[in-house]
Amino acid sequence: MRNKSYLSISLLIVLPILSALWLFIYSPSPIPGLIVLLWTGAAGLYFYHLNRRHRAELEAVLTLQRASVSALVDLAQMRDHGVTGSHMHRLTYYADVLCADLDLSPELRDIIARTISLHDIGKVGVPDRILNKPGPLTADEWAMIKQHPLAGAMVLDSITEDLTITNPEALDYLNIAKEIALYHHEKWDGSGYPMGLKGEEIPLSARIAALCDVYDSLRSPRPYKRPFTHEEAVAIVKSGKGTHFDPELVQRFLRLADHFAAIWNEHGELVGNS
Ligand SMILES: [Fe+2]
Ligand SMILES: [Fe+2]
Image (cartoon, rainbow, N blue to C red; front, side):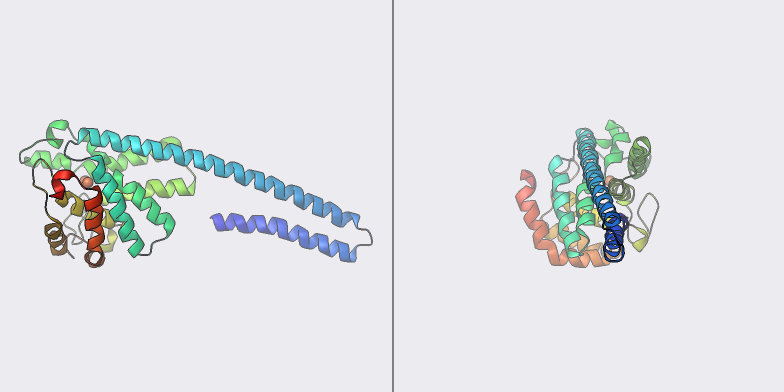
């Protein structure tokens, strides 16, 4: 899309310059060539100004977007007592490590790392008594918890609809945030929820989020479980290769496990560091 607009602007500048050159060479008077050159200069300045204004507007939209996302994440965290802000930060680091190893484009890598913290945004729709229940959940309570990916996708959809966003970068951001929110509980073998997608039907962003989220949740202290050691967490992720997780991502994770451990050691919660 952006390449297309650069191409059309280049054509608008290059073609008149070529025409001016042709006029200088073949016209008996230099005036038509000068007029075309002046016109080209004015058009160039106009496009430069337009481009700067567009960049400034985009920057403002992205700043607003980051602030809104961070407010949404804070809101979700305030309700879910078992999850802390540092869990979200660590996910950003893990996702970046995996995305770099996958050689994803810098844009996609940045979007996945920034939107992964929205994975549980749909939990704002789950009642407190269920979200923070210390004991085991009933079947009905589980059914309500399992609605959170759909609720998260709806929240993110409503942002796109309400703001009538048309900028492709902002749309990519929201689409990937939605993929992660909606599909982070899907499993490679199709036994996950809410859609029961299988293998590569699950978007890559959500497969990355699932692995990072499970590793960090295993390492973290939660009201219903003790924190697992790095070795225990790695063994559990490894046992989910091809069933819970994308086998290729697990291969990469095993190779990068030291990086995951280093991120936990630097940013992990104190109880989990033991
Ligand atoms: Fe979740
Ligand atoms: Fe999580």
